[in-house]
Image 1 (tube, rainbow, N blue to C red):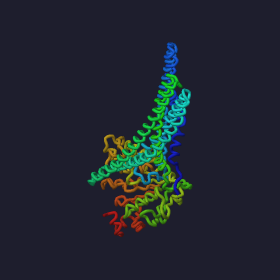
Image 2: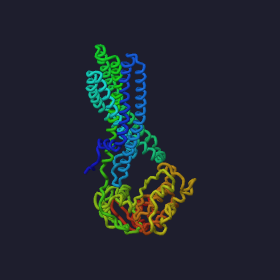
Image 3: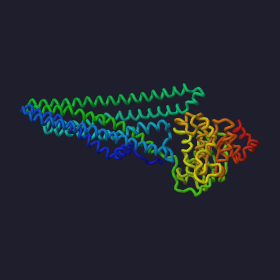
Image 4: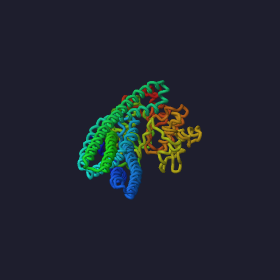
Length: 575
């Protein structure tokens, strides 16, 4: 069943409602600015009729002082109104980003399904910004309506036909502008989709740059990015053409409407129905009307783009969770006993396995997909198709994923490092709990024991500033083997009752791998550990090894016995 989540309109409504105060302040000040702008031609008309036509110097001075006061008010209103509106828009965009990050980090998962990481990042940046700026569109739209209303009232006071013309014509122009914004909305959605895809491809290219250079495939990767970038450019140009076409047509309609207002006002003046000052005021108001009508065109374009972006944001927020949280609790304390009963997912088929609390078990597979499926089940990234996994007798599907991960840590082979120092990355797992076994990171032990067990202390000694050395974005300042050791140290420092480690030594030399194997065994003494790997050095320190072939448990026993007795195992781990 699909998850119930917000629609694109819900996202826009929440963005606006969440900044009610900022919207109210910004709109009030913006209305003050538009009122001042609308009053200027009216006051000039009064100056002409009362002071210039009447040759009254005192009246001229008084009206000029009134004009100065109006200009001061409208200038301050504009400055403060824009400040309040911009702040509200940025806060709204920030709130949308927080919602997106919260959904992506939700232990239930599912938000990133079917999307490249770069695409999700694009939604959390550009789409969130466009949704936030709908707040600015609201404040500007309210000010435009106020300006048009004041102009209509002033024109009604000058001449009923002129006022009625504005009151009838303005809604018609608004309706036409809304119709003309529909193509822009569709083109904007396509533009954002292609931009997100280009960002995802670029992120993949940068992340795998070393590998691509190693196998000589950088030209093919760059060619792929160029094609994606051209598609994104084409979508952007189509959206830009749609926007310029909409703006041009709306501007032409607006210009024609203002010319009509001026023409009607001129005929009324020629017939003597209005004075010279009123004619000047009417023409000035007609020219001023260009501003609110342009505002309407701008707001329509902003709303069209915001609706497209809000729909993309809503898709992420409403993404169906990969797993459904249960309502059972873990026993206290967690012993770490694991049991797999007829487990089936992906390349796994009816896997049965019992792991005693505190046991160190190696899992070797003939298919990498089987190892990946096992990791997804144990970390509850995905629930098994058949069978079940139990922790201390409690099915994982009956637990909340967040609670499960306080007891079980799955350290993936491709775990990323974060910008910061080596020490900060290891300590990111949090201080190890009290009561760690000998050799573990006990209270006050810091990150040193975990780094030593993972041979990450050697990494620190080889760096210019030791553990204070910055690793760069995604750890790119380190070599592949150094990154692996720091990531393993982080997993060990977390000190979970159950630790599942996947291929932690594929990029290190044989001597270092042997040291890590011994350090890992010593560090994890008394706590359940699964080593999902085909590395002989790691499998040799396990209490026993489970060999999974064709998705089923094919053999089980000490590493040396399996090497001697099982040909398929020898091929898998020694070839």
